[in-house]
Length: 126
Length: 246
Image (cartoon, one colour):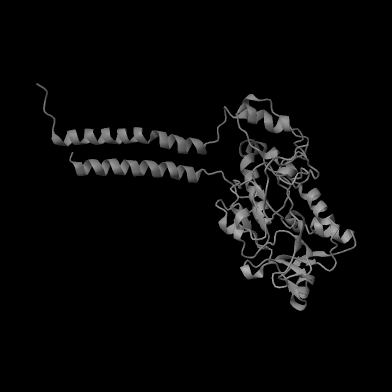
């Protein structure tokens, strides 16, 4: 016959069980939210593709930043140009001055990661 | 453990877990705001002045210049051709039998644009300087704006046009609505719109743009001293294209 455990100890055990259960339930959410905020080193297109270098002196941002976040910058610039008419040196059209090859600088990574941005349907890439 | 304790523990854990996750997200956010949220307004209010006494009926210089500058879709087929500037014949309702007038029509850049009011995705909007523009990245091609516009200024790209005369400027892909932008890209750089330049080149000089907020600009002086008309002022859309001799 099993020993009767006291009410206090049973309560602690149950609390622990519930906390663990809730954390398990929460895990996918936490993983998704935290995971998306961490810049991933391995697995990014730059890791397994031959890196293309542009002939210009410096980019408008650090290379590492551009590799991961160029689309954010472009989207932001787009909003500023189209909505507010702020036309400075950081637009899609200016990028083309140094990044002269669409195959090397756009399509290569986008194909590898199966992304299909539709910039060049309307904008011209020489 | 009773039900009360169970609910307290479960709820507390969920709340703590989610807030930790989101707090982490905000603390490590890498989103950099390039220009800040406050972009100063230019204080301008662009308007256009059309002098119909100088405009020749057989001349299409402005239409052609516009098409070249903005890559307006042109297939030489009336079903699919777009015109940011059109030439139409206008006759007065109150003057039956009166003479028909050849008038150029373009987007009136209304102060109260019906097209912007109906746009379900805020693709059409009025800029700070009064220019009404379509954000083609956002346009879903529902064509509400075409129905709303009382001036028939809105056009739809029914098909892609491979013709690309001005590589500096984007063309439109199939499935978005568009209209005259008053060459906002040129005005932002301090240049005149393509149609105004072309009209001046022909020697007619019937078109001009200017700042309606500036009391010393030509357009402000002309609109305050001369008899100018706007098309369908009764609609209350407050159009900003003024006509002399309409």
